[in-house]
Length: 144
Image (cartoon, rainbow, N blue to C red; front, side):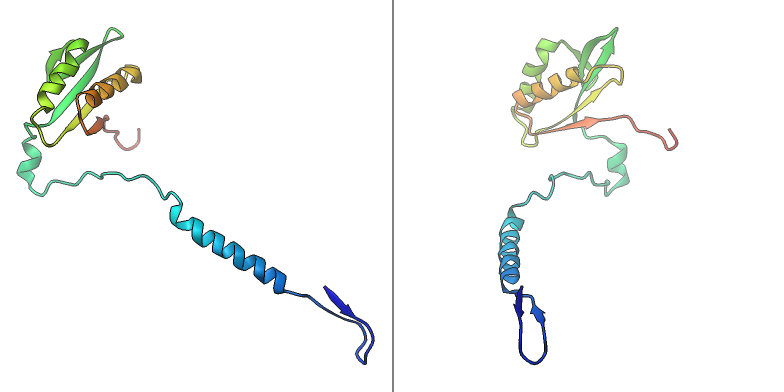
């Protein structure tokens, strides 16, 4: 802040805004450079409704659903309603997905079962070469 004394008008004060403008311009340039590299969110795939009602009534035969069921606190495994032992899941999934171009699998777990068993099935799917793994959750009714 500069002050001048003397002269005909008495004491006057002027703020020197040039350094402030220089700082603001430097900050503006920094924010413009940082902005394109900022993370905006996650990419997700949103399910689309079927175009044809017949398609909704007839489920896809190629859909693979691995179920993790609670059997007295211990997990039981099924692939499309066929029972499998835990050791047999990975070889069967590798056999199923060996010839498929579309590698999509769904995992459905019981609500009373620990999530660690569902996570193991997801790891089995990744080991079998499955690209996309979805989780099937129960539908919650309004008001619950």
